[in-house]
Image: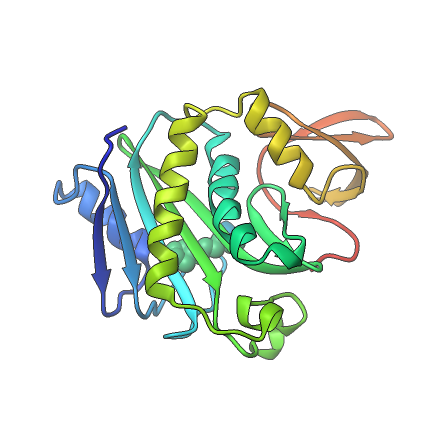
Amino acid sequence: MSKTLDFIILEKTDSTNAYLKEKIRSGEIFSDTALLALAQEKGRGRLSRAWHSERGKSLTMSLALKSPLSPALTLLCALGVYEVLSEIRKENNLQIKWPNDIISNGKKLCGILTERVGDFTVIGIGLNVNNESFPTEISQKATSLYILSGKSFDINALWVKIAESVKKTLAEYDFTLCDEARNKYKSLCVNLGKEAQFGEPLKKGIAEDILSTGELLVHTEWGYEKISFGDVFVSGIY
Ligand code: BTN
């Protein structure tokens, strides 16, 4: 991974992930790049869901990092974002919901969408910063730094810190969920020891471990299941 990071700020775009993916494919982006959109009009979340954002209130950014293909990488990205958020909100007992949501008091503060294009991993980060409220459909599920603290935060300063922290975290752990990274992730993961509901038709079990592959290990009445994608519901959490 190169040591430098290029920074781009756009007035608006459909989706910061889609923008970076297109520029990688066209060869216009060929080194590690961070992108902030002041407004994002068609943001996407995991499992093709829409991602809500508001100009000046939501932080919508993506990173294009040259990296090996690693399923655990998405968990490491959550650790990189966590480093910055836990520093500015020490009071808030932030946790990670597998695989990479940052949550507080059972509500989602930040979502991460990782996608692969060529040699690059594109890491899209949506962080609720200065939102005072949310649309009814997500008002019970989402929180923001403003709601947690009563204070406004400077998105321009925050996104650079997050970009640098994610890049540093991936490099520090060599893109793998090594023992140190895995133990850190496990200490923050809200799923462990709790009931997990997953799959279709819905199955239940106790989430017991995070494997070095990034999978969630769930003990069901039929045996152990390794979960590598999809939603895992935890009671009491959105
Ligand atoms: C999730 O479903 O939790 C992931 C949400 C990821 C949203 C971010 S906002 C910036 C980037 N651009 C997108 O279109 N999505 C990601």
